[in-house]
Amino acid sequence: MAELSDIKNETVRQEIEEYIQREDERAEIVSLYSRTSPLMQEIAAGIIGGKNKLVDELTRRALNDEKIDALVIMDDGLIAGMAIVGIKFRENFIFVPEVLSCARAMKAGMAHIDPILSASGVEPLGRVVMGTVKGDMHDIGKNLCIMMLRGAGFEVFDLGVDTSPDEFIDAVEEHDAKIVGMSALLTTTMPNMAKTIEAFIDADIRDDVKVMVGGAPVTPDFALEMDADSYGDNAVECVEIAKKLMSEIKSETRG
Amino acid sequence: MTIDGSELEKRLARIRGIFVDISQHAEKQMQLRCPYKNAQCQCTAKFGCRYQRKPTVGGDPLLCSHDDQFDFRSAWESDPESREKMRHQLRDIRKNRY
Image 1 (cartoon, rainbow over the protein chains, first blue to last red):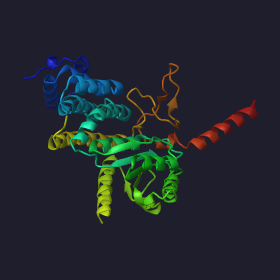
Image 2: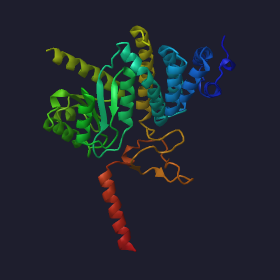
Image 3: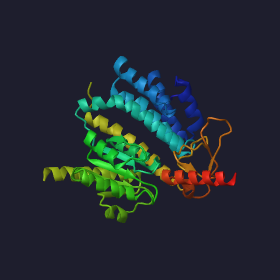
Image 4: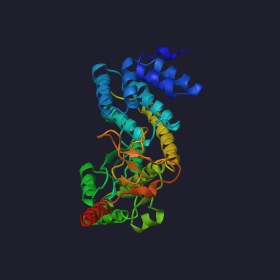
């Protein structure tokens, strides 16, 4: 049976000792990490610490210099790290801002895997442009949606907060995105979703994209009123909606 | 270097599983604890909030003083224009006073 002391990386050992309290989970995680290489443990520790640049550099080194298989990097580095992050979050040792940093670190690692996926014929489920509308600085809900969409296999372009209609239009054209996700948390900024959709019509791109909207004040009725294609209540639902919109796009293209 | 599609799908399913759990827990947690408040009780929001407090050490992020016992969202001041207007109004009030 694997022991905690079998794990070479001190950060990973400390994380397990301090935060993984359920016996079954601890045994499973110790068993997983005890068979992984020091470099994979370093990648996992980088993810747990939310260190983008470190994960970026280590993943590059693992793939290019050490010639480690991409699936092994995913299993033993990226997913292994994120598994500990998930448990720490569930047990309230860390919170949403830390989780989002960890997800960004994972994305930095996945960026090196993505070209291999393309070369293997694995294409993203779709391209999505996401942003919080003009005048609104809230980004947590949007960032959770982005994390979920990327995890599901979508390619996501994040425009951040306070995004003008022109910025949405430029991003759609630049990335040839088929879905736009708009978020607003205030009743005062919600009209800017409608203004952005109007701007899509003026720019003659409305028929080229599906628009999904979400955020605390937004309801399915409001979404209909502003002529959005779909409304999502939370990050999990956002993925289902994006998949549905992609299948609509595909059937429209075929038709 | 290439990847076997079905093997990859297994990994993506595991990532999705982890993220679904995270999102569901976040939804629940956000009912009372502000999602912009980190583990060190610092505020990571890019907007103003009544619960923000100055840090004890200069240069550190603002602290969050909310006690996680009730809905916090009414304290958010998120419209940059309104905030700017309010800032100007406050400056005018101060000018008139002194």
